Image (tube, rainbow, N blue to C red; front, side, top):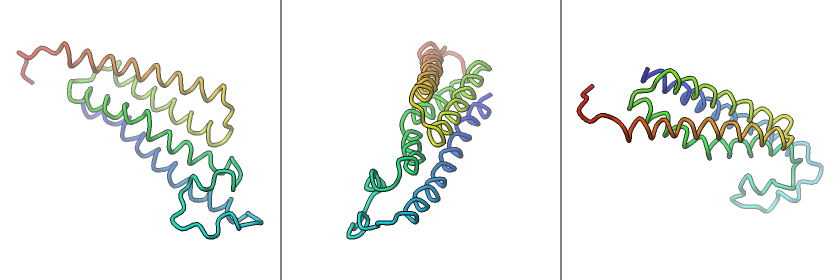
Length: 150
């Protein structure tokens, strides 16, 4: 079950990289369509955040989601590794896949539609699943029997 517990984390990493690549056409496409590029000229070492208010908001949504995929999911990666090492059970694996599924749906919602009530509900639901996983990881490590050798 240890290797299987790492699969959801690996899939979320791949999804994060897909979202990263999605930024390129979203932002560069929006920049190419700008009639007045003066807001971009003269900027040396510009950052993605410099595009806020310059290109349409929707063109930045994918970058916003990419940032979100580097926030809460980092806890998910740690919990996944802890459970994989401590010995994940079927419930842990199911919760991990549910978390990943919700995060991917959250990404698609934020990038394509971005209506806040649904986005927040998806975030809240994924947070509840992550809390359950974290509690299971804490339990698996705090109450592990040190006399058992694997």
